[in-house]
Length: 117
Image (cartoon, rainbow, N blue to C red; front, side):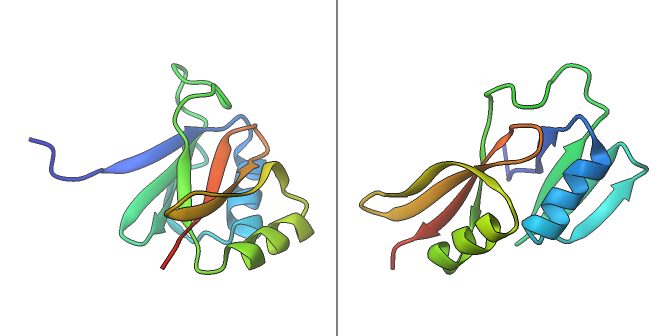
């Protein structure tokens, strides 16, 4: 049976550009890098990876979406906008959370998410 999620991965077209976005704009820290084809970021016990080595999946294919949890959504959105990040939605509200959607340089969507207390 399935025990846990091993990792999430996004295909990217340009590793240098993608790493700059994920490290400098989103502030993720590299956990492991396998050359310039596969880079893993550790996010609260889960691995999020980017790769240029996946010929079967293309960047921004409108497939899966990752949601990163933040403790201050308003502040995170303001910081990302200040860094030039492209948003596809303003802050949205649901009964249990608030979120906004940003795109990486390849057009992959990333949800910036905050659970309500």
